Length: 330
Image 1 (cartoon, helix red, strand yellow):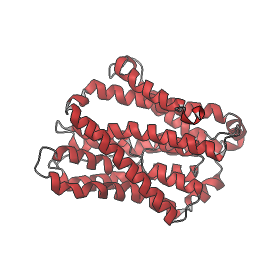
Image 2 (spheres, one colour):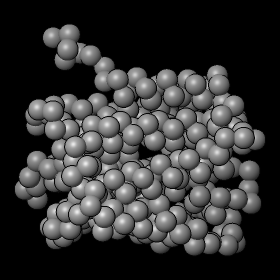
Image 3 (tube, rainbow, N blue to C red):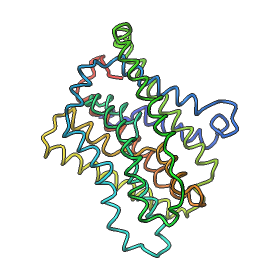
């Protein structure tokens, strides 16, 4: 009984990372001599390089054929999320809460996060090729759809959009390392299989590093002082409700489409995620000439932390249900 109630160590590590970001921000601060952004970027590249070593080309081809899974994940990310937020606009239009509603719509319109989606799907023994494809393609689709969702509601529409840096980041951090890993699989694939546990720890370390860096930036910019404590508590509650509503709906859709266990995991895990990285870049593009960027990122910050906390618990539980037997996926 006690074993069932034990909190996963990865969840504890996430909480510790946030606490460290608050009390010891020196390493992740903007003036830090440690290049945290570069380290995080390289870490993500290595994650996908190791995935490439561990995946067969046949597995990826089979994963890409599952079009129903891809449509379901992308529809959840870019259609279901915003449609859950839009009906509340008439209730808050021209009120003091309109800006906070806009922040929730912004979060809802964002792409899925890549690295944590893939890692969590792998932990839960889900469809890993499907997760890599959906999480990666989500960033490309978001470059088009996220601004389209926001522009009708954004007063400041004369900000120039230049998302070339996002494409470059997607190619350099994800596509190239993954393809390189696939090419080198014949030489190092056996090594990757033997060291899956170590590589899994490396994945988690990089995620913790990204969380630490993100929260240092948030505390440094003092974005949490822009709203009252009561409003923050309300945000957390609303974010939790939104997450569980989407998680339940994606689970129901998966059953409706008769997904197997692995596809159901990928559908729910990828379809409920939102990217803090894309959110930060998109907020600069949409609201960079205003002083509301901090407020626009608040719900996303809460959602980003809570989605990893919740999904990590679910992923660990599902992974154990499938039977670990000393052969944990990375």
